[in-house]
Amino acid sequence: MTKTKHSDISLLIKKIIAFREARDWKQFHNPKDVAISLALEAAELLEHFQWKNPSEIKQHIKEHKTEIGEELADVLYWVLLMSHDLQIDISGALERKIKKNIIKYPIKKAKGRHTKYTKL
Amino acid sequence: MTKTKHSDISLLIKKIIAFREARDWKQFHNPKDVAISLALEAAELLEHFQWKNPSEIKQHIKEHKTEIGEELADVLYWVLLMSHDLQIDISGALERKIKKNIIKYPIKKAKGRHTKYTKL
Amino acid sequence: MTKTKHSDISLLIKKIIAFREARDWKQFHNPKDVAISLALEAAELLEHFQWKNPSEIKQHIKEHKTEIGEELADVLYWVLLMSHDLQIDISGALERKIKKNIIKYPIKKAKGRHTKYTKL
Amino acid sequence: MTKTKHSDISLLIKKIIAFREARDWKQFHNPKDVAISLALEAAELLEHFQWKNPSEIKQHIKEHKTEIGEELADVLYWVLLMSHDLQIDISGALERKIKKNIIKYPIKKAKGRHTKYTKL
Image (tube, rainbow over the protein chains, first blue to last red):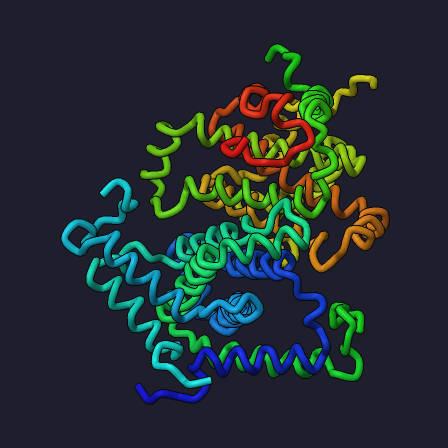
């Protein structure tokens, strides 16, 4: 895969913050309301898969890929904005999370089994 | 800011998918349950800011930055996994979203005003 | 069915408010945080059905009926408390909603079809 | 308060089920999708209080009481429908919950303090 400019998280954050600065909107972005926004966007994403069985979902994804992508982007928008405001290194946090999960779910025990780690 | 290797979205996705492949968990990751997971992690993030006024939130963030970072990472995890599974270019989707918002919220009208674009 | 005392909504509200009054907790119950509570309890309910197929869900309900009932009660708790605080006649609101839906979804058109009313 | 007919929970459930029976919709109401519906309605309720400070919320409630009542009714709708389908006595579950909380939060310790019971 060719590494493209726009896949860098810090560049995406820069664009989000530049958009906000130009509109002087930081004053509205307190963490509680930002977290609410993130939850509401997650709900809008979930709505796409409601009342549908697996084959209907497959069809829906084919026909509404752009809209689903927009909902995912809305969630990502708030994840990155909050990470920036709270000075959280989100990439590092995700890497650490994956490392934790590698230990919590050892391949030998977890392979093919979707059991919560406390029950493995 | 020095551009670090781990801030690249495609690399993060690779690590998420490698973790999953090794455990043979793709079979469990249907879009409906993945979207539920994302919404549940968003709820866990929101819980950090509940029943607190602005100054209590400030204090809470100072004392629980790692935990909040973990919740944000959990949300990001599902955003990236779903983007991969649905073959959605999430960086591109976010860039397009920002461009749309630049048009929807012209600086002249939107500066310092937090009104929904339909009411601007 | 024998009408039992405890199935009356106004009596349930009275018990909720008496519990709160005795602890002097009204001061904490602003509508934003109450709505967050309600959403978080809804997420806890949803968690019961995650990562499960229909037959696993059936089994889970059999084994965890009390816990699911508690989550439903937690949601109802906040619905009734908020209705009280905002002086909303929740039974009346629900009755009106059902009447609206009777018109929105005429039996002839809607029978056996789960299409959104705008598409009927 | 005069006890009115419509405040009885079992009567509300009867109306919800009659509405559904007439449309033959039970086939669509599996618990996972019902729980998703409930969570999505909770999100729509929460949206009313987003990006608003306490005085803006007060004003919003005054102007949008009917809409907020409708969202609360939507949540209640799914709570009652799910209780019925899972044969859960929701009034009893709520009464038991209140009794539990009376023990978990003794007046002496909890009065005027909004601390989680584990920290009391």
